Image 1 (cartoon, rainbow, N blue to C red):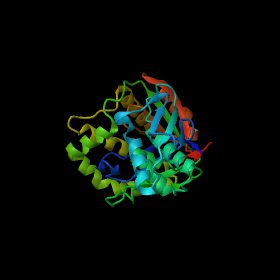
Image 2 (image 1 turned 90 degrees about the horizontal axis):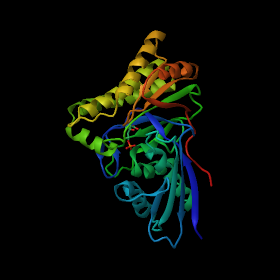
Image 3 (image 1 turned 180 degrees about the vertical axis):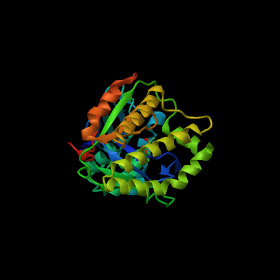
Image 4 (image 1 turned 90 degrees about the vertical axis):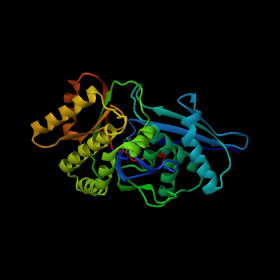
Length: 331
Ligand code: PMV
């Protein structure tokens, strides 16, 4: 009898960023990070089927068979299944991203979270959130945060085997109902440096990275306090500072890594102007390893943010996301 399940998961957008690993193979980060999981405006649906006749594990993503380096994450997830849970069966994995075409948005977080949840459903493993998070982490670091909805912390952990490096939910999606992420999808060529390669070079070559690491525990503490108190002003300032800090260490990497483009920089300037005119931060930007802007704001200010963005050249389209409830089995 084949065992199968389908799971839906959504991306998360960090406000305290993860950039830099202390263990490349197990994907263990140098610092803890914090994110919000998004609603189903963007989503990945993954079906997993285990059956005795399947001779090797395969992944078809958006209709294309994935092999080589891009398959590495799946290989790690299945090697953990074998070693930790004694599962030796192969699986047929079919995954589809429901992201607007040419969005240039990273889908690995929702992808590996959906994979972990689908495996757990198909095999009825009854994994805890912690074990699901560790399984997703082996596919892609940021995916370990997408196994929960709401506001999530990835605890970096100390152990060499990675058993204490997993995500926990700090508050669920109902904690700050007015919070929105206005995503500005910026015209871009294909990402030049993968986050995996970029992080490796930053850890190896950036002196500024060591300085960034010294302040991370405090940044995480302050951000948690700001979000728990729904203190938008502190939240906004910390979010911009941490995004700027991550992009500064990217720029300090030898050779420099630059993910932001002219449009991203224009957005940074216009967010500053909007906040100065409002005499307090009403919106805040954060950028991942690409030029798209994630502008967190409150519902009452979404219109002003969209108006500001409409005056900037080079933006393909905008999307407005709420904080979501996390992954679920859908079949
Ligand atoms: O998606 P990953 O695991 O390769 O990591 C990317 C990390 C950033 O998106 C740049 C920041 C973060 O914390 O999500």
